[in-house]
Image (cartoon, rainbow, N blue to C red):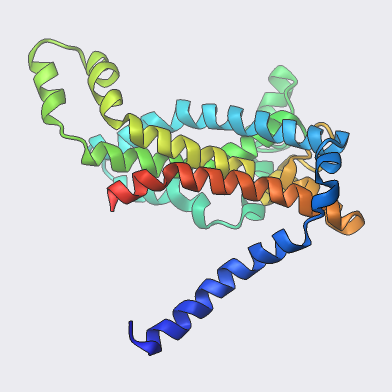
Length: 256
């Protein structure tokens, strides 16, 4: 490798790895089990796992059909639609939280109707956490599933259709099994992104312990009062990220 490339490559590697090494070096390993067993840590972890899982289920319910729409139809303006779907990937999460407030807040475009008709108010509730996480995480699922649909061999679907299978049957019995690895990879990425969501959550749902305080929000709060607790919570999120990346490594290698 030419040294003009080697030097910046090593510098980039150090730039990415050293902060993680610093986190591991400063971790209070001696008191780690006790800190992980603290009620506030367990409550934040429980809430994060529950809301991320529910948000992923919502994304699967809405995102898989949306990915099919983008991959298999010829709707006019499909490129614009795809761009709109991927906007949350580049939109600052805080801006996403503000947008959710303007739409689903008690005086929002749809939130006012929900409150007047059903008495439902999403902001600053656990349901609001799920909405915020689903908003920022769904594009990961849609992109993964759309890519899998485009790569799938449509001849199997055409063969099933010629044998008399309905479109719904073809989708359930042929299309979904073919793209199952893509759906699984997208769901895992979606879940990991939801677990680490911060900006939209704190803007739309607030930071209330036991109700809306997820792990990233607990890290932010603990950093001001108990840095060791913030490090412990960060280690948990780091471990989850490493597990997710390790689990998807073979799929990425195969795709490459």
